[in-house]
Image (cartoon, rainbow, N blue to C red; front, side, top):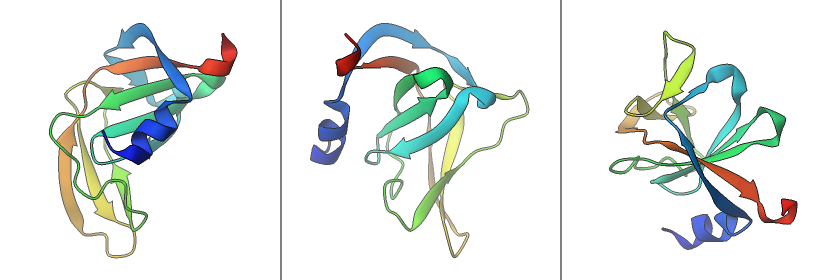
Length: 109
């Protein structure tokens, strides 16, 4: 895990709960902490960590964005997400999602 990812995740603790899928209406943002760890901010103050299989090279670079398509209205484990250049639109790679591990802010104890 990168130092940047570890620093950001230090604000949270794992609850021990995980989900296979999240409804896209429950996802406010997906923040790549590095090329392997993604912080998902959900509705209702919920947070999830997704540690992708492999690496999403370039995902955490500000010049890139994450892109995905879904026909079910859910983002699920094993679904492929892509890294795309913001200005060029050029596809930069892809990776598969894993389980969404629920997080809790440490200050909420």
